[in-house]
Image (cartoon, rainbow over all chains, first blue to last red; front, top):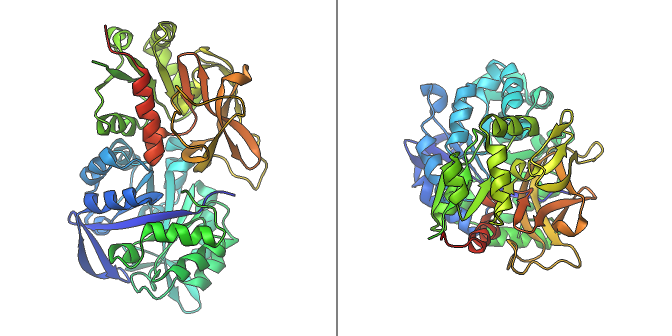
Amino acid sequence: MLKKRVIARLDIKNEFVIKGIQLEGLRKIGDPNEIAKSYYVSGVDEIIFMDSVAAYYDRNSLSSIISMASEDIFIPITVGGGIRSIADIQKALNSGADKVAINTQALKSPEFITEASKVFGSQCIVVSIEAKKVGSQWHAYFDNGREDSGRKVSEWAQEAELLGAGEIMITSVDKEGTKRGMDKALIDNLINLVSVPLIVSGGVGCMDDILETFISGVDAVALASVLHYDILHLGQIKDSMKQAGLKVRS
Amino acid sequence: MKTIVVIDYGIGNVKSICSALKSLGFEYEFSRDTDVIMQASGVILPGVGAFKHGMSLLEEAGLDKVIKKFAATGKPLLGICLGMQLLFEKSYEFGEYRGLGIIEGNVEKLAVEPPIKLPHISWNEIFPISNVAWTDTILENVPAASDMYFVHSFRGVPTDKDSILAEADYAGIKFCATVKKDNIYGCQFHPEKSAKFGLRIVENFFNLCEDKK
């Protein structure tokens, strides 16, 4: 059994870590490099930097942040937001990232997942899915949770895996930033459908939310609010996970 | 004054290993120049990607001969991930390809069965082999069962089992995580992505290197 991973997710806008609720109403949290470094020192397993506005400005401004982060953070780094070409991925990797998370461009042209995983290896390609409930289904959204692609999350996740995604990250837009628990039904719906590692994000407000999610079988949980607002500490999270019998990196 | 040379052969992500050396306060150069490499106190051969591609890049730049020559000086050489695999004689990744042949043995696929996935991408623990001590090696003061970051589908299989310094276990398959043959080291995992104890390995490697005369 692989180790369960605790990932810190830093959403970035205008060179600041920001946090909203349901991806809206963004608040400034602080300097990305300082925050990332403090999570690294505290024992986080990976860090994800997401450019939260890249999708609609057609650019990704994270290069300099990643470049600085890779100077003093020695764990895997993922970059997402505005990745739309092989050149964008190359640039992210050259800046020091190990993986890229792709959402909008993957929905627009699914063959991009295949192309990217052939060039860089599937271990490098995370397909990011923003899931929002529409009636009784979840749809995959893009442009930071604003546009409905009309695609069912369960089908899209399976297709993304077949196309070459090395990991799938699901963000519940409905729960994101609420700290009221993860979308359990959404996770249960996906857990047996994909065989690549599943990273889930959105809604964690307390330790039980994390433990419950890991016990349901996900490989990694991406945390933002609970870390940014000092609600939970990484040491405490890892200890609780160990006590719950989960395999974690110590 | 010690200088580490990280070999520049046009392959993948090398920024992290350079950053690791820099953060530890060590002098390093990123170079493909024969003289610079031969004068180094220690050499690191990084690498990600396919074996054939990596080997071709080394050969095109004439670096295969330089690395072998450097290895013969007795000064420390460390291969990381693909860089470790390239040290072996042969690889069976997408065919059969000749490696540097600095360490006897071959590179073989991790023989896991579905639903176990390849590549093996994970934090995973490294363990000493019962009769092999880590003292005075790159693993000195690294606690047994420390977690290291692995991303690979193939693994080096040294002919001389005594050259296996550490093992890891993926889905019940034990494989060589760190190899040591005299002055030659290889790590299948990425020390530069393995947090505190990974950095300790980089530091130990530096400490094994001697001042330039």
